[in-house]
Length: 300
Image (cartoon, rainbow, N blue to C red; front, side, top):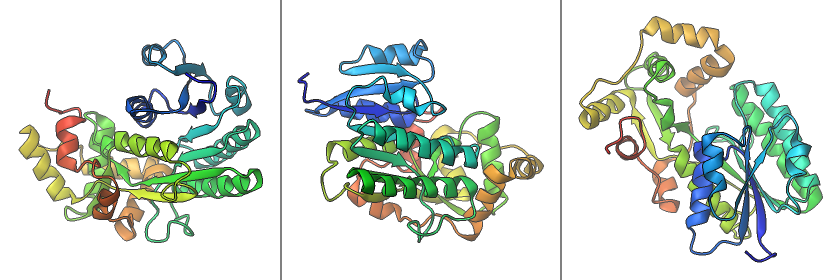
């Protein structure tokens, strides 16, 4: 690859968003990138597999030491940032620290995965702590980019289909949703599809579509009753869930992470229209397609 290749640091490289981003960049007919895949463990099976791909270089590090991450890459151009939402205060601090380290290292374009926050996502952080932390990271990226002359793209997805997992957490998610009512609607998107949009944001970073733009993403809007019907039609099984008291217990025990969020889903909810998202990104999957192609119940 020529020495003029733009170098991109990808956080969450072994996860679904980062992995889909890398795959999409590598499958592009031509891309001027060297990809530096950030992982906590460079010797893991998934990290080793990444290292065998052309123009991909695995680097080890984490958000606790952002300067060390970027010190491994000479003259980086782009940064894909995905933060951990489990502790909102820590997420905000780490996100801001990574932004500073990235820009100090010379990063020119940041793609950050935040979240849709309803009809006024640009100004309302919401009452959900890990939505608000992403809002604050967004604002920090804008301010630091103005100072450095860099650019940014914010991706604002809705709930992930991957919350429907074939385990306790997946069952708990459905039980908490059911507390909002069988007719309560939720908007969803595939994390792999988010990664595909992120790839476009790097490939077309200087375009009007992506330069200093926030993009809300949704593949489907569906009620819990419809969700269950589609699941049974596709799998022949009843939608997996646990007892309602377990759902209530999860909302209580993890009030900051889950309780406030599910209450917000009922009273406010995401603002993006999936039909509008699909006008720009026809590949965004609806629930039925995701079940067939990506879920734990996918058809072989």
